[in-house]
Length: 173
Image (cartoon, rainbow, N blue to C red):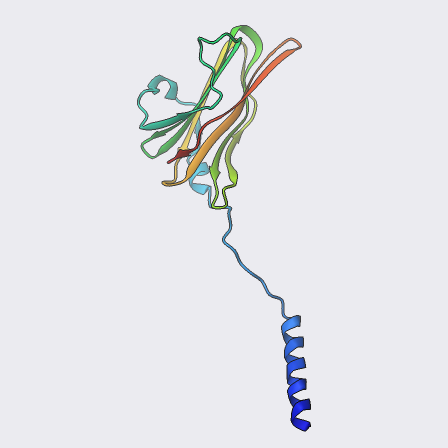
């Protein structure tokens, strides 16, 4: 009987000890380092002049060619040039407007859980009293990382506004 009470007391103490311990589980974070890309970021450049010199590239899914019957034409492209990841974007319209450009431009990478994470975000890049806008930026790429770029082409002319969303295909660097 004494042995049974002693064993029961040990089991109860063990249960209390286990229940009072705080357990913490650690998982691999999906927020992989983006420091490589952001520290080498530069906007502008003459990338549009060297458009045929890129190793690989993907275009926007919703790129609109200049031969279609629409007023606004929008193109985005994500390219590899050596160790650089280059993003290029342009918007054009049939005539000069008050504002023409892109907004919500995002360079993203696909994390280990398949979720897209923003690396670089630019907003409201535009020119005034023009019929076309083009811009670009570059950063270092990480080998094996999957990237995409997205943005919204837009024009504002008086009270008239037109927008078109665009996103590239997946691009493995």
